[in-house]
Image 1 (cartoon, rainbow, N blue to C red):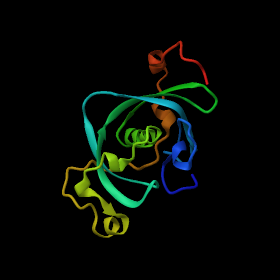
Image 2: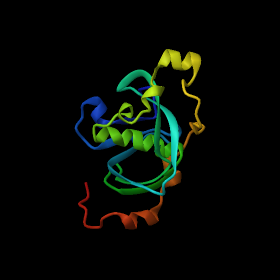
Image 3: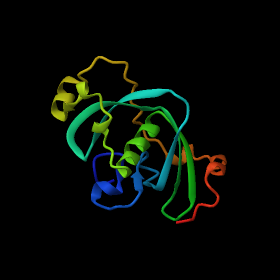
Image 4: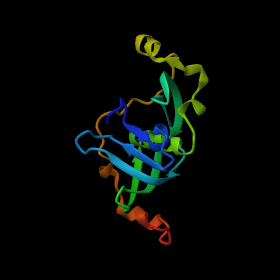
Length: 159
């Protein structure tokens, strides 16, 4: 991707569309989620340090569901369904939040907010039970689950 990150939502570049582009694995290339819907699976959560180009040069600790299902269309209008845990689940939630006008700073533990230079120099400001980052390349197709497509509304109009 052109920016320094793993995802970008259309509203971040002034496009009023419900589209998210993710690049969890450079070799696989970008994945497009059009009109994504997230379903939380279980009650487990994870704490991660997030940043965003919409709030430049800051980091903060956010708690999010650790296990989700995502239903969406790809850019060709084909239905997609994924079951995600850990890092990929966090990335998808972060980017999909933008589609609803929500930024990570709306969910952050405000005691943890720090500017990027201080974060890089001193590390996280809170002693916590943060989950380890799983920032290794992840191919979204590895999480595709054709059986989950049965959950999608069959009467929903194709895009």
